[in-house]
Each structure stands twice: as structure tokens, then as C-alpha cells.
Image 1: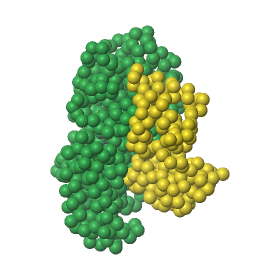
Image 2: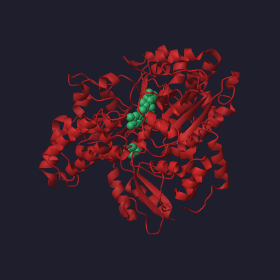
Image 3: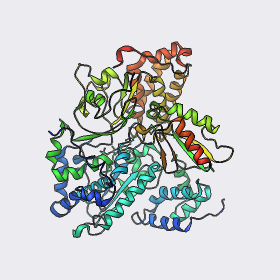
Image 4: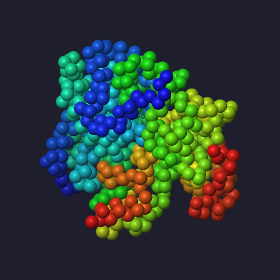
Amino acid sequence: MAKGIKILTEHINTPGIETFEVYKKSGGYAAVEKVIKKMTPEEVVEEVKKSGVRGRGGAGFPMGMKWSFLAKPEGVPRYLVCNADESEPGTFKDHFLMKSIPHLLIEGMIVSSFALGAHKSFIYVRGELMYVIRILEKAIEEAKAAGYLGKNILGSGYDLELVVQPGGGAYICGEETALLESLEGKRGNPRNKPPFPAVKGLYQSPTVVNNVESIANTPWIINNGGDAYAALGIGRSTGTKLISASGHIKNPGVYEIELGLPVEEFLYSDEFLGGIRDGHHLKAVVAGGSSVPILPANLFLKTANGEDRLMSYESLSDGGFASGTMLGSGGFIAMDETTCIVRNTWNFSRFYHHESCGQCSPCREGTGWMEKVLHRIEHGHGNMRDIDLLVDVAKKIEGNTICPLGDAAAWPVASAIRHFRDEFEWHVKYPKEATMKGAVYVKEEVLV
Amino acid sequence: MSDKIAFSEDRLAKAKEIILRYPEGKQKSALLPLLHLAQEQFGWVSAASMDYIAEMLQIEPIEVYEVATFYTMFHLEPVGKHVIEYCRTGPCCTMGGEEVYDHLKTKLKIEANQTTSNGLFTLKEVECLAACGWGPCFQIREKFYMHLTNEKVDGIIEELSK
Ligand SMILES: Cc1cc2nc3c(=O)[nH]c(=O)nc-3n(C[C@H](O)[C@H](O)[C@H](O)COP(=O)(O)O)c2cc1C
Ligand code: FES
């Protein structure tokens, strides 16, 4: 197996790669030629199924399977919607990909739309990235001028139009049904499921929603075959994954890794994160975006059974929520011993409270409670019962809401208390020390 | 009741083009793009802008109000010349965001949701801008300011104050 293979980022540093010309010269749009001239939509779906690629937006649902669920009633349009809302704290990979190599997404959109029989497809980009929207619109114009988009693509009779839609600033619109509501010009309130988007999605028509990175994988899969993709990675974690890394590491940034890369290598090798900043030690890691459980450094590097952890869906979740976490969106946040876990948890809970759409009482009220209680503990006014109260509120939100934002709000709080309870207790017992500037509670055994 | 306003000629053309992007009868999908256009032109989204957009899309004004108030990007009150939207979320904090934020507030002598007395700067706190590893960061209109330090902030503020 080729070590260090790059599927999405191979050409990302080529000067001018954002232009159609350079992208095409680097082998771009070959997948469009191939599907349009030589393949049926069913064959494209089959290759994506074979690849085993899983949704890169966070949930990890197999992409080919999702495509095969798409309803195909006669005379009803079908839609592909690309989720470029990217708002999960810690995640900035889609932003990086779209601004650097926009044609890769456009090519993936054409391949995927062809497979699904869609003639109008949307890219929903968070509104804050208006400059990226302009980059994508320019790329679309170029592709259209070259005959790869629009009416009668490459003389095949297949028509496709791409529309780039801005959001308005709302994390919840990353949830696929909220995104569809937003795209219809409404508030971003998630829908009850069923019906699922595959049956009734955008404008009540069958719809597939996929993440930017998921869609950007399809040209390579078509060019090289689903089997070649499935040969990369490890087990059911096939292919590569973009990881956006932030925090107390030497080299923050976006990395494409082959799934199955040992966590230790990712963290310490100069090719990747380069280790923790000088003179400091790793205390905790949020491995897959703010929603996934936080892990103390020791449990992040090795599972509870003492096995080396790998960057894969399965290995990161080894141990369940008791001692594991999730790959999620690949938003990797490293925290050294100067980080106060209570403060970080309060910060995240404020985020979820701010972003709750307010439809479901457990989430609307619960996120507010958690923020308030955490604020009180962080600022030296908490009591011991507050800690259990947080666990209780988190439990009551989890699983009791229309969309998973409730779970996403509950998990960071529950996991922080599960693994760092003594730090919360220290804040309650020694409020004066805990609220001093720069004061942080550190337990040596979790540091790495 | 609000005073009448209108898009500039080029924005009107753009608005018409946007409305045509969506399938027949689904023109309400143009709502967010048009709100962005209005904010781009006027700096904020007034009731008059919302009424104007409602008319353009042939929907009820309330349908515009309920959307404009849901999304955090729209300024529903007049703002300063430059709106600084500062990321306050966890990952940026681990990149040193809190210290830089304190410095920025001291420099501008305002708190969040306030405007400097000369009307040049409005400060807003926003959540994660999908730039975490390039943090600390803030945004002014479409531009991202990243890898911020106190010195960089000083330079930006001085440049924009000219
Ligand atoms: C609160 C919330 C926020 C989400 N934000 C995003 C997002 O920003 N980008 C994304 O691709 N998926 C996001 N998702 C997941 C989507 O609902 C959906 O599963 C995904 O877009 C499907 O694409 P994929 O299968 O290719 O990953 C979010 C989910 C929830 C519950
Ligand atoms: S936390 Fe600031 S950009 Fe993500």
C-alpha cells in the first residue's frame, strides 16, 4: 500500500490549481469524461459503493449506500445538495479544500449528480465564507465555458446546473434537514424524520445531502476504481481523511492522512502535527470536532486495553463512551497542561446554547442550564451538587431531540466530567485559586 | 411602516439573476442571498430592506423578518463602518484567542455589541469561523484576519482608522 497517498490534496500546492486550465492539466475532469462517455449512472453508484467511502461530514454513513436509497419516482426531479456549512468547532477542512482547489468539488459535484440523475445541484456554503462562494462561482463559470457544465455536457445530452447558496450564520444549518429548510428560504429548524431526505428532501423531492470532502473523493474513485479506494485505509475505514488540527501543536493546519495512521505518528511526526509546543505536555484531545467526547491524553494515545490507537472510525471509538471517542468531522483539537477543562467545557456549552434552534425543549432549555451551571463553576460560585446536575441535564437532553444537536451538546459536558471530574471538584472546593488568572488544575498521570 | 429603499442597478440585476436560479415557484429560496445583497449595500438589514425583499419575492414581510432574525450574520441595527466579528469559540481560545480579544477591546475601548464613538468600529462576538488552526481570527465583511497577535491587531486597527 502506498504510504502517504494523497487523494484530495495531491495537487493542492500546484501554482494556479484554482484555475480550470491548471486543474485540467493536472488530470482534472477526467472523471467527468469517463462517467459521461463510458458509464451508466448505476455503474457510478456501484463504484462508490465498492469504495466503502463513508460520509465525511461527521456521521460516517456509507456514501454508496445512501445513494442507493434515493427514491426515483417518475417525473419528479431529484437533487444533490453539498453540505459546505462547516461550522463544527475545530473543523476547517472543507474551507481549506474549497478555497485551494475549487474545481475538485465542482468535478465531484458533476460526477455525483450524474450518478443520482440530478439536473440541478446545490452547494450550501456557510455565509461567512462569501469569498469562497465567489471562488466556487468562478470555477463553475470556467467549467461551463469548457462544456463540462450546463446544457448537453460534452455532447452527451446530460444537463446539469450548479447553484452555490450562502447560509446566514447558523451552526444548525449543517444538520441536513435544517440545511434543506434554509435552502428553501426558511429558518433552519430540523425536520422530523421520516420522511428522510432520500424520499422527501429539497422541495419535497428525493434528495441526497453529502459533505464537501465526501463528494470530492468521487473523481479519484471513478478514475482508479472503487476497489483501489477500498484497498486504502484499514477495515471499514477505507481511504483517506482530512484532519483539521488546531490547538497546542507545532503545526496546526489541514492534513490528509490515510485512515489507520497511528495516532502517535500523527501527533509527533514532523510530516504531520510535529508534537506539542516546546516545553509543554499534552493534556487532552478532542479528536473529531467539538461534539465528540473529550479524552485525556493517555486514553487518546492508547485504548483502555493498552493498544495503540489509530486514526480510524473503529479505533477512535474503541471503548465506547467510557474510554473512547469518535472520528467525527476530523476536527482535531489538542490541549496542553495550560488548558482549563472547565473553562473549555463552558465555552463549548455556550456555543451549543447559542446555536440551539429552540424547537425542542430539552435542547433549548438544557443547553441554557448547562451553560449557566458551567459558568457558575468556572467563576467560583459552583457547588458539588452542580457537577451531578450537569450529568443529569446532559442525560436528559441526549436522545430526546428531533436532531442530534442535543447529543452534540450533551457529549462534551458528560465526557469532560467523566474524565476530569477532579478538576470540576477543585473549582468548587478552591474557588479563589481556580479563578486566579492562569491557574489550572493538572493531574500528572493524564499528561503525555 | 418604513421608508422606501431600493437596490443599486448592478445589485438589482444580480438579484434578478439569483431569483431565476431556483425552480419555478421556489423563488423564496432566494431569501438569504438577497438579505446578503441588502447588507452588502446598506451595511445592515433594516425593516425597509426586508419589506423591499418581501415584495421582490412576492412573499409576506413576516416571512422575511422571521428568517432575518434567525440567522446571526444579519445586522438588524445600524453598525459602524467596520464590523469586527471576533471568533470566541474553544479552538481559537487554545490558539491564544482570549488574550488577543482582551487586547482588541482595550484598544478600541469598547465591549462586544458596542460601536466606537467615532463610528468606525463595531465589535461582535461570533462562533467558530472554520479557521481554527489559523486562529486567533476575526472577520470584517468578507475578509478573514488570521494568526492574530496583539501587534497584528494594532496594525489592522491603525490601517483601518486612516
Ligand atoms: C448539528 C449538526 C451540525 C452538522 N454540521 C455539518 C456540517 O457543517 N457539514 C457536514 O457536512 N455535515 C454536518 N452535519 C451532518 C449532516 O447532518 C449530514 O449527516 C451530512 O452532511 C451528510 O453528509 P456525509 O454523509 O457526506 O457526511 C451536522 C449534523 C448536525 C446534527
Ligand atoms: S474556533 Fe475560531 S475559527 Fe474555529
